[in-house]
Image (cartoon, rainbow, N blue to C red; front, top):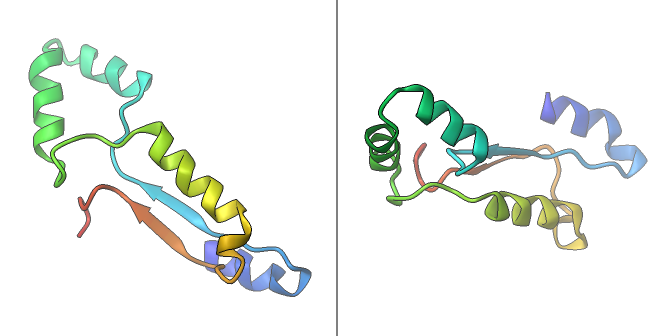
Length: 89
């Protein structure tokens, strides 16, 4: 979808890129972990699966979004940018 939108609108000066985040420390994640009945163990397992040994932050994802909106990424379109702490690598 990202590549199709980028191609369709490139001549209008509109860029389209996607952000593909890994696990982000968020209120909804904490809610889901509490629902397991063993929050501490569930959090420990989540963190253990992360290549960097920690969860991402909303601020890290937001920083990428800001970069994609700024002039520094003006020559970039149709890209799916993975920001997952190395999980998919």
